[in-house]
Length: 205
Image 1 (cartoon, rainbow, N blue to C red):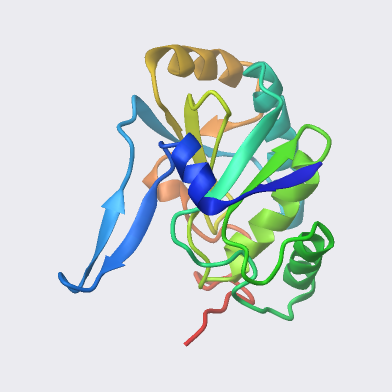
Image 2 (cartoon, one colour):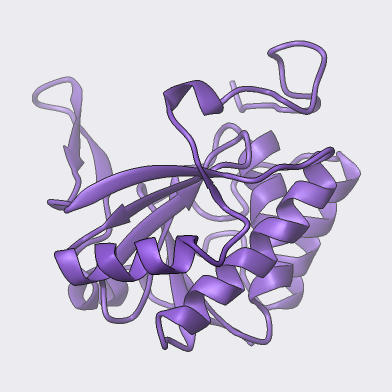
């Protein structure tokens, strides 16, 4: 099941979400990122992006259950709406239609909550939006207990922060039974294409 939270209500309740905004007086962006215990880049051995994000969804569901949580909360780091950018590329169009079918309107910029029944499908659509719609904000997710913070980059890697020592210990135990592999900054590249450019990635000018 996919449910929604108003942006302000979400930020009032879950204060660890990263935020980014433009300061007119300073003519520059301002950033908030919570203090983290440790940061990781997690990768998966995959032959195609389609297969990659399917496995990504399965592994994130396993992580959710390992944390003994029932949902992840997803929120963009700016006030840009989820459906801000139109892209006619079929998997991206299907992702937009999925959000529309779940009553996400064109102006909605709040949080989306996914439970265990819908997480794999949601991750599949989110990964395509992130990969191809460059105008979207960084979409971060947390668990309800606010112990981990993550986002999926345009290359399909999971960037994950543990927010305390206990969460870090739990993640390391999970990694021993997971298909995830530890990566580094060099892991973020277009492994599913012949060039560095991502096929059908667009922005709004």
